[in-house]
Length: 414
Ligand code: SAH
Ligand code: SF4
Image 1 (cartoon, rainbow, N blue to C red):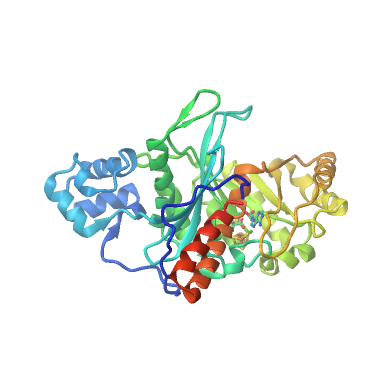
Image 2: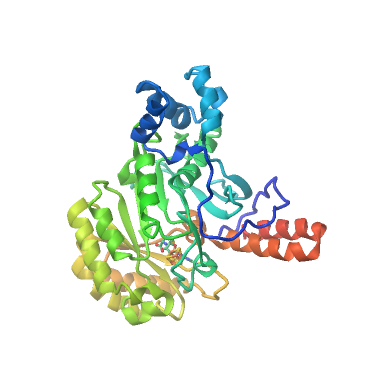
């Protein structure tokens, strides 16, 4: 989380928590954000509309960024009225917002239509040797997560439900509208008014919600929509082998990030229960197949936990494990974020030593920059704090409720 002062949300008083169940909310209206261009065309043609209407409607949603059917002036009035009855454009409610002082990292706590809460983050990066300025959105794919990694705030919540494709797309659209309304003036003078990159690194495990994640990837990638290049999208996974192998066959060149976090199964099992089902060797074999099929690189994420997986022998073991696969990609070291589980990041010196050992072993690596990535990696923390305050609030009365919720929102930015 950033250490900068948060900007408290206008929504200081919070509603009661949504009913807990595992079903996706049911409504008769079609969520247009969950439809591919072909599906949008079929939906309109079932209603007697010509084919070109799909392009017009997609243009209104993704290019003009309109969510109000009445304002879609390219469509005939009768169709606009029908859309208002039979369709919707999902728009989650912002319950809290944390913005870093330099305004380059913005984290939202969003409330879905059934009252559940998720987090979404926008990270703005100036141009660097690696390329142009970027506006990267970090999306959630589930409410909670079933995999229970011990260092992860989302993992500690347990699994609540999958997000629909429309709910995933809506997170990106929310920031697309923000950037359109308030373009970012990058330090090099460039103006950025649209989302350029996506990382599926928010709450939840994308490959556990495979179908909706894939559909969202296709919708966000389609030329009639936001048209974000597959090579600008990264799916991060805890290492679900069948999902990685399936993704390799999709003919969609997205980048893959693997949450490795340990150099051997025994140590990995201590923090990541999924290791029992998918040992490291199987995950690495799936990565090789992914690279062979897609030509994309894989990033291995390694959260550094002081006293757990950050010793020089761990670095040596990791180097030995990955050096033969050096052509697959590189290692991203992430000093752990403070969570309820009481982990600490290693000292700067321990991190440097770890990096040097990896490099000497032939494994290229980088340390994830403090600021924006840091806030994204810790997805789940803001929700945890606000939900805890809300739980307390219900038992101590309304006035106290507002106060605690406000404190939680502030704490979310510290
Ligand atoms: N479920 C997917 C994607 C969401 S988590 C996955 O596990 O890859 C995105 C990344 O944040 C993962 O690499 C995850 O291990 C990391 N992460 C989780 N909790 C963290 C914390 N407290 N500090 C730093 N990184 C964390
Ligand atoms: Fe789930 Fe990823 Fe968190 Fe593990 S790190 S609990 S897989 S969200």
